[in-house]
View 1: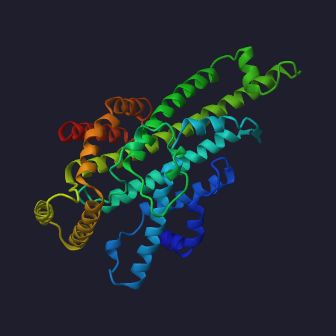
View 2: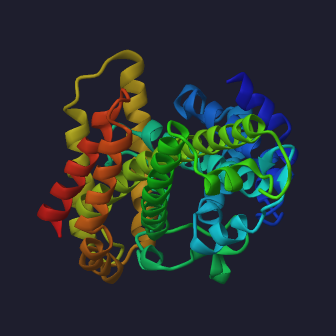
View 3: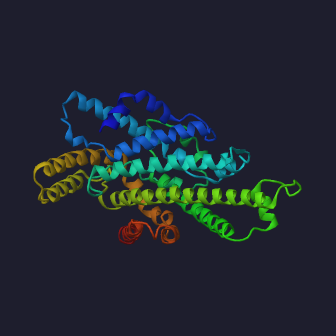
Length: 375
């Protein structure tokens, strides 16, 4: 709570950083944005829900206003920090080392940190807003057009941050595809460098990793040390890269699951018959009353009911029957079995020794069941 208050009291500074008008090659600006998004994401995960404030309290109104400003800017960063082949090629052009570090690698890792922070923030907003897709916030629209794009950053609408622009769910699928493909490449590269790290290096390897031309006279053991040090650095960088990619994938899978569950099961289009819409809302309210909650839990549930009703009305105003039908007809092609298998392979190869190994597996099973039963 104290961290959130600090962020809101210095709102203009944080908002200026989050607007991110710097080019993606500016390492210092990226590091500043990485730290800022990390603070906000962690503060959001430990924040105080709105239900603890009086709706008519001036401080509560101001608190929510600041919170929504930060939220809009954080969400608008999501499409800006999606991976693409074009960006990867640009980063590889930074070949000049700085104090033994590759600038391109530093930019890539910082870029991934920002993407991970933003994805984590969105996941926290969704998961903290309600116990199920009936009650949780819906942050991304029902369009899937961006999912199969080659480079989402090339489109004009994603080239700058916008307070009024709401990204679509296609951005989530696009990020999943890009991260999954890039992960497999990084994983193979990490394995290759790790094998070299534990074996004798050839002359070509010594030339490549030592950074010293073979024509230059240098002691053999010094060349070996330089090459080993460089290999160790590459292996560590690849490991950090895989960690960030796997974290982004896990959060994107959760966001995708919540949104698919809402759009495929609970969403009522705005041009649906009013009587059917009222029956839908009344049935949901009756189901909520069946939950035996007391004390603070009951007040939280009542707040979520009121909040969800408002959210449902808002979503119904922007989702038409045609949009929902197009979403249902395209979702199986976009969230394909090959994509889910690739994510499953990543989870089994990299995440099997981690405590939340079963998390992604469970979400993939739920996604498959949703697609099988509701499309």
